[in-house]
Length: 166
Image 1 (cartoon, rainbow, N blue to C red):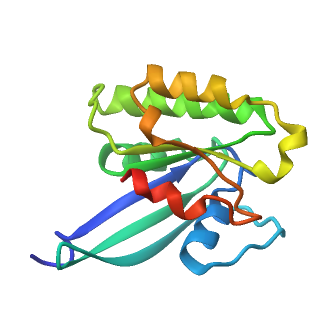
Image 2: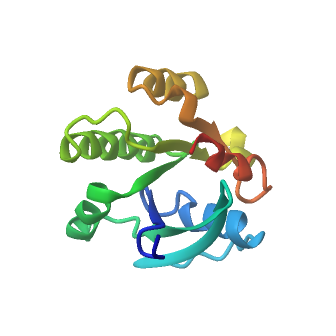
């Protein structure tokens, strides 16, 4: 098997400032920075040994704005997904729902689409706008209930569990 054949992609999608880059930095590098830097696209290749075979996963940290829909369509056709919203921003959860509908439409409602729904910023619980139950209820309706988690990239709370759904 060539390296190209043993490579997978996971696109991290969501609105700007929900913590997509922070989750990836925390997971891949064990770091957190509170400084905001707008992302256009960053790719983080990560090697894994699965069943004794070396595989590479390209984590694609995407732009959090709507100005790159063509790039998003490319990911939707072939990647797995981590859809991130901030528990402090109901608009970001609405965007995750829209993204999931777009993914299902492009992939023709394929139920085997690998996807994890992540509510970030548990460290800001006092500012919560998206209730856990409401998000979980939606995830179950969409057959994603087993792939739903709330985390805090800042406090390193449950970030490593994000990929256990894959």
